Amino acid sequence: SACERLACPNDCSGRGRCLSAKALTRMEDPGILYKSSGCTSSEICQDGDCTDRNYGACSEVNVYQTPWEADQFFGCLCDAGYGGYDCSLRTCVRGDDPLTGSQGNDVQLLECQADFGTFTLSFRRETTAPISVDASVTDVTNAINVLTSLEGQQPKV
Image 1 (cartoon, rainbow, N blue to C red):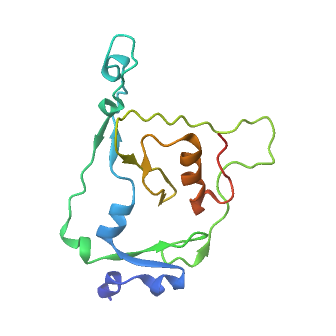
Image 2 (cartoon, helix red, strand yellow):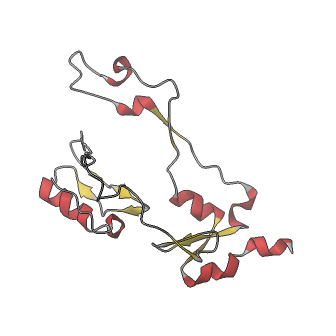
């Protein structure tokens, strides 16, 4: 019947959480849309030598609008290692094959320009505890290493 769509299929097979469409949407991408035409340095740079930058000029935030069915339909948020509409499928390891040669490590640059406050970092639906903007490299690395979503691939600084 049509009412079965209002509940999670197979109770998420005991390998996930049953959440409303509203909750699932809020946990996904925050809605940052990048301009399709790209950005130019004239939009990013705030001064002549481009030491002061505003990357926010390249994006817009897509605000989630709550539709009528947001609290009526439910879906599964599967535990790590499981997937499918009802969390009944085992997922395969994702990412680069570490046994292939001639490849370099992925390098990410973290640049924080703030005088006070905290920030968080997220990876595969998991977020760090708040990190102070004046945290040391060791403090940031320790906060990242707590994430279980890294699956044993700890960052190197």
